[in-house]
Length: 196
Length: 101
Image (cartoon, rainbow over all chains, first blue to last red; front, top):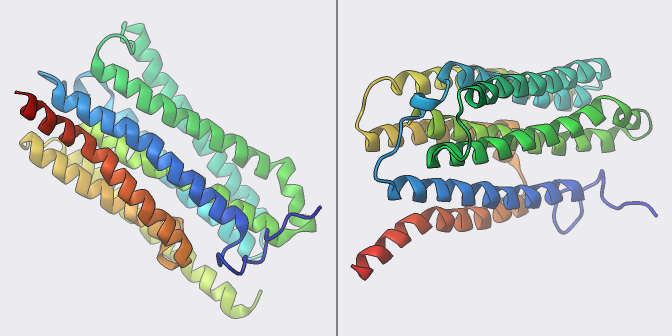
């Protein structure tokens, strides 16, 4: 059976099905992270005292990760634009860079986590670290999830370009929507956890 | 693909680079203002305003929300309503505590 509306927009929604599907999924993701942000506000406003992020966290490393993630959003959208321009070679390059940026982000994060564990700082140590590890850990899992998808589309999934180029381009667009969302969450996590 | 389509995509890629540079500048600004020793409330406000501006640019340009279909906007409007409610819960709990006292 053929899957309907993978390329042409569905008449009643005006978009191809995967796009609406991913936006609905992202809506649920907003609620997931929103609930945790709300918990963070509740814990912080209810605490007698709250440390400045800098007391426990490494701001230069987190700034580097912010730069990496924003750059990866640009390479991701450029990979989609390359397909739109019929340039598969450039797509491969940009998608590869996006994947590598994900690897870079996780390596930096592993350094951060590793250092904290070395000096005996764990989620159980205090409320700040509990919410820090929960939020950044969940975000990190989202980065890994995105890398699995991006890696698939860089490698075996790219075969579709030869048979159904428009469908493949749409797949990259929706994978991009997810990746940009992961970037967007980090844009809020960075100042609220590290800089305030 | 027609020439006009290709031209429109090329135009968009220029916009992506502009947004990238702006996001980088705003990231540096976010870090810089955090060293100003502002009162906590003001620091939170400034950080959230910059983050919201950055987030809006990612959503509008990278996620193509500046020219999306109506249905997607409706989905997002509903999401925003529920998100605002979620963020209001901590304040509601504070009113509740005052009432108990």
